[in-house]
View 1 (cartoon, one colour):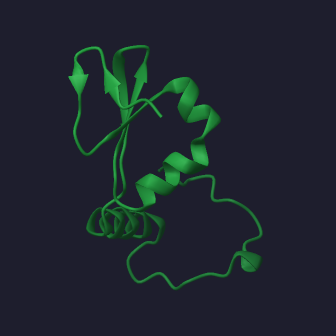
View 2: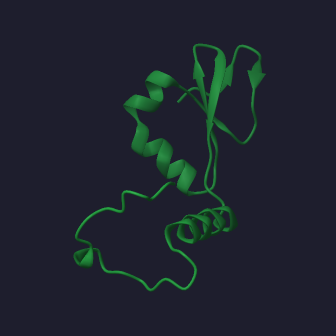
Amino acid sequence: MTQSLARGHIPDMNVATVEELQAHLESYLAEVACGREVLISRGTQPIARLAPVEDATWRSLSAEGLAGAYGEGEPDYRSVLLKETNPEYRP
């Protein structure tokens, strides 16, 4: 695991190259699941950050997704009841 970039060490954050991330994805995901962030670099250039999803953010995104999936007053439908898609549906 790379711990520093050419511009210096970033405390409390793992730094991984794209190649390291690909080779050890499960390990880095375990780090993220524990609440730590991973900075992804291509060589010495940071390109992305892998961070845990905050519970409040996740709940908000889930609620927004559900709100868009159902119309007002619409009952829940089991997927086995669907016979065909609605051609007028626009996301």
